[in-house]
Image (tube, rainbow, N blue to C red; front, top):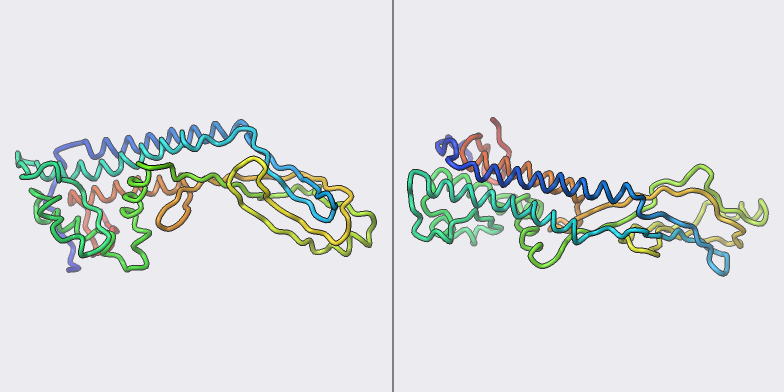
Length: 283
């Protein structure tokens, strides 16, 4: 079935789904502020350390103030839970509109289904009382409607995974990388001949978790090092584990907020759904 669905669900009778999305956005804003405050304290720096045999040097990370990942994880959990609740609230709103009473109210929820087989029984169990067109819209935006290669990256699947994972542990990881070396950076050798033998440099870069003493870079030489000097610019990268692997934390949460807002518009029939397996919509 590829024809657009004609909207009939109308305007929601409850504002609760929108309130939950707004609350998720507030948690994200608060998280950004907390992260910005931590960065403002210059909580880490890199330092060059020459090996005892003077045939290599490494840049090591010094962490003055570890990132409060558990605190930030609580904001992430609150953001994700509110987004998941917004979807459930929309289904409840449609199931009870006009005074309808679902036969099993505790089962009413927004399904997120990753295989077609698992959809069997979902309309009767989780969507009891919803208009048929609303059920069809929900069916058409399920992750299993996408091509197999795209299903792990479906935003609903990611939301469900993050919501479940948050019940057990935080999924935030802080990584750090050397992104720039100052123009005055150099390795000094005993003479020009030794310096020439070490061009180009034999360097290995790392992007470790943000922990004190972590090695960011190792430079190996064939001649003894006299001195290493210069400045280094470091960047911390906050990622969150998803079915697609590590993804940028703030960007991922922002995308989920926008996606859930779009899903609500589809569920309520405020937009035209262009086809199964896609949440693209036009006003």
